[in-house]
Each structure stands twice: as C-alpha cells, then as structure tokens.
Amino acid sequence: MSEKIPVSVKINGEEYSQTIEPRLLLSDFLRHELGLTGTHVGCEHGVCGACTVLLDGQAIRSCLMFAAQADNHEIVTVEGLAASKESLHPIQKALREAHGLQCGFCTPGILMTLIPFLEDNPNPKDNEIRQALSGNLCRCTGYQNIVKAVKLAASLQNSVHSAFPR
Ligand code: FES
Ligand code: FES
Image (cartoon, rainbow, N blue to C red; front, side, top):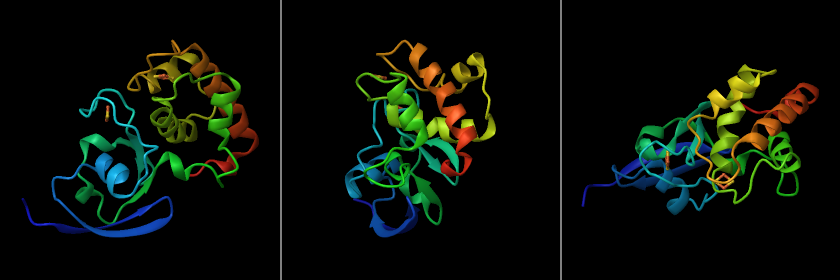
C-alpha cells in the first residue's frame, strides 16, 4: 500500500483537509470519503459523463482525475447547486418541469455540464445544446425533453442571472 498524502480542497464552499491514497480517484474521494454520492459513477473511464463536477468553474470528469490533483482547487458537486435543501437550482427546476429526466442517473452530470455551458451560452440553439451534452449519456429520455429543459433553464437564467454560480 502506498503512503498517504495530504489534500486540501474546497468543495461546495467548505474546506476539506484529509490524507488519502495517491491513487484515489476524485469521484471515489467525493463519494466514499466525503459521502457526496450525488456524483454518480457509470463507466469509470471518461465516456458517460455521470461523474461530471466543476473544478474551478470548468466541467470535468471526476473519474479521470486523482483526488490529489484537486489539492488547493475548488470543486462544486450537484449537492452544491441549490441554495438550500428545500430549494432547487433553476436548472434543476427546469429539468423537473420539462420532464428532462427519468431514472435520474445521468442527471447530476448533465446539470454540472450545463452550468458553465449556459453561463457561456445564455441563448443556446438546439444543436449547440445537443453538442454540449454529447458527452453525457442518457439511456432513458432520448434527449428531446432535456433539450426543452435547457431552453427553459436558459430563460430562467436570463431572468435570474445571479442564481447561477460558477
Ligand atoms: S463515470 Fe466518469 S465519465 Fe463515466
Ligand atoms: S434519465 Fe435515466 S439515464 Fe438519463
């Protein structure tokens, strides 16, 4: 077994300092060490997008990164989106209202992909939405309602811009 190393990382606004195995994946760190199980793990090799989180505001695949590489960086997971446990982030609301999810397995990754996408594309066209989500595999919806939800989210974003954190 390799020697453990220290890691300090800010997650959803909270500072975490732990010693970890150098080979520990960021996705496993979030789920197994911190209990942030909203980050899902599907393929574990960068294909499905279920494990997407924000690293310093950019959407990344947490199964393709070691937790040690997040040292001194800032992460947002799906648990950090809504302002409180009783509320939903506007993108979450839009997915619910437009029926943009069924089993929900892909949903956290889709949400985290959409945060920076909508920040950069406040009025996206259908083809831009489909391209943005081309790395997020959904087995249930056929994507039609997800695209509708993203358009609804964009209109909510444009009316409540400050509700979308980076
Ligand atoms: S679990 Fe990371 S991309 Fe599939
Ligand atoms: S809603 Fe089931 S995989 Fe997307």
